[in-house]
Length: 118
Image 1 (cartoon, rainbow, N blue to C red):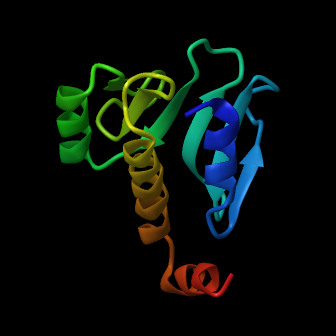
Image 2 (image 1 turned 120 degrees about the vertical axis):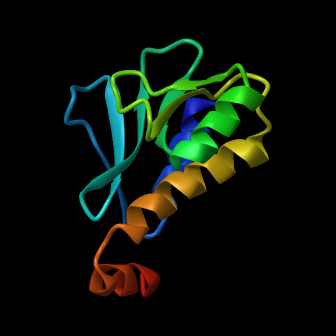
Image 3 (image 1 turned 90 degrees about the vertical axis):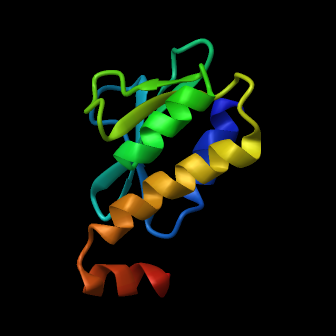
């Protein structure tokens, strides 16, 4: 998955926004103001940080050498993923979906209902 495909997939999520709070070279994807993905524009190969359940994070790290503890993030709750490695695109999309859903689940019931209606 290239960075543009990653970006498009993240922005297709209900309520997703793109910001650059860490400078113009780092894309941050949020839902309801909470970050679910981060990608550096100048990384080769393209990599992204994705939120992850701690147990699942360990499983993914064991399964793929392209999945590492989150760079500059909580190593327990975030993974850094090589987007252009051998991880199938289907699996990468599941990782993005999981990250997004973790953030949505942390929102108020009212905010979750608003997102479902978008």
